[in-house]
Image (cartoon, rainbow, N blue to C red; front, top):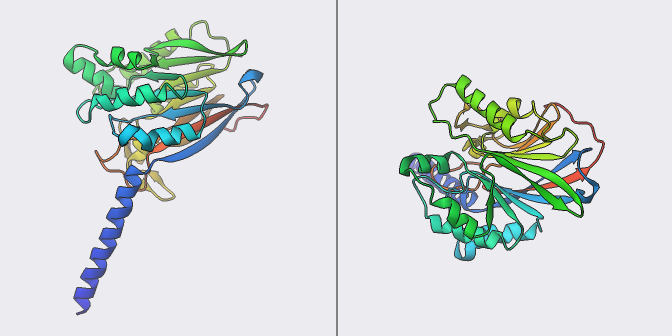
Amino acid sequence: MKKNKLLQGGAIAAGIFTAVTVWQNVNVKITRYHIYSQNLPTNFNDYRIVLLSDIHSKNFGIGQKALLSRVKKTHPNLILIAGDWVDAKHGQFSNCTEQAKLLSKIAPVWAIYGNHELRKIRKTGQDNMHRALCDAGVHFLHTSGTRIERENSYINLIGIEDDTKPHTKKKKRTQNITNMLSRVMHGTLPDEFTILMAHHPEFIDIYSNEPIDLVVSGHAHGGQVRIPFVGGLIAPNQGLFPRYTSGKHIKNNTQMIISRGLGGFKPIRIFNQPEVVVISLHKDKKKLVKK
């Protein structure tokens, strides 16, 4: 009898855990951050940016409602997509184009490619994604930069895309990132507010060597499994118990926000809800604290 009760209790606990895990994988939360900088033009004070990353061709229901409703709720001035919008193996590309059309009606959308888009291009030898997403209203930064203007003021928005093959040695990869960043930052002044879109957060030491105020990133999927009071369990290019999986990080005068991403069941997330990140910019003399 006692054994049967233990089995029943275990089955109930397993059922509850499964239900909670499924709910966490499909329910998108909103996470908010505030960025303070003396370099921010006054006209950009309280400017709101929505950061999306690692969507992996996921479908958010009819009219992409589970995603779009949350983005609309935040009233963004700008939407940034930090790579892996498209999945190299799974999901329908039509989900991405539908999302692009709907998101671009809310605010201007700028994006970069992540490792999945670049992998798909290497595999097929052609890029069928760029034109379709541009036609849907998306602007791309393929290791390039632009200015976002507002009331006769501007901020810099730059993006880099690391197309290095996955098994390239770390030293070579680091050099490639350094070269790309140096090229795209050419002509940017230190007192101009500059945002970098970079899919890989683990290169923060390189990013912070340039006069970059804010880095937006993804790739780590929040560590996939998040252990309470510890953090993420594993992340690509960082291994076990990675440092850069989520949240706000500061190095030198550079602040970095990492999205946990939006992709769902492949592989499954545990204690790691998909998120829409909202970043509010503020002009302030607040001193940065190294973390």
